[in-house]
Length: 138
Image (cartoon, rainbow, N blue to C red; front, side):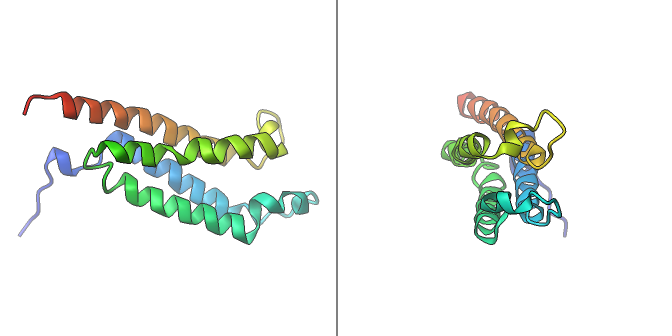
């Protein structure tokens, strides 16, 4: 017996981009604490056990939202999938010197910024898909 997925059962490009963004976010949180740089102790507020665990928890919840309700084009899920971006990005960019210098040779925030960009683009694409889906005639 084979199971066939209709178009509404497959995750759209927006859901996939959001998923990629949160997987990158989880990976950067998990890998961030393993720096052997002499400056590593000053970044413990971003790479310690508590921030990494919190980031992994947020990423897991957001993956569940992206491939559950957002895949089903539930409008509230778009806000739930995007809301962590400004809530996490604004304080991190404002306080992490590695983010402020990420356009130079200082590394440590690139993956986080790429993840947040992927989630943002994915939310725009998913929003257009949700809007188109809910505007079609019944």
